[in-house]
Image (tube, rainbow, N blue to C red):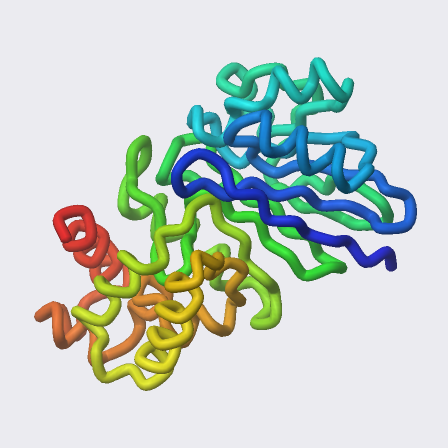
Length: 256
């Protein structure tokens, strides 16, 4: 198996784009180019050969670098077949659960609607990486723009069902505000209070809180914890479905 490197590139005000590369062959791909310039600089500095751009969803702050990077590096843009009309410059259209091969890695596209109707996340099976766009954040989940709470719940559960040691790379640095929300409704969670210290330390040095892991999110992300009795009690929803708890949490977060 080829070990892949991940470089986190800060873009815009709080976006993260990612460069994934094979250190031996120098072949690379980008996930969600929010803007071209920082990525052009990084690809050049790292002396990489950019082959692909993978897109999780059509929002401007995830695709704005597509055409400039494609023109400069002659790379191919890969995205979800069912949302291809909204992805600028798309070349390769893949379907739900389809595998895309890159440098001996099997990358699975997973349909995960809610934030947008055509949102997907990419799971790198051998390297145990998940690039989740705006479905899941460290300690949070995305806003529902084009789907229902049920869609979003099912998409978040798809991410949660990955192996515990999978690293999660999300599209934004929202962790501090997500932390405040989690602490408001899950304040007796010891894992969360411990993580709060780590997050505050990282952010005080302007360091990213990403990546996180599936296990870390299971222990601390309230949207992964809809099955926890203390949380459903806190919301007055004891005995209700996890999906209903999730819907209530998302509504509360929207107005937090």
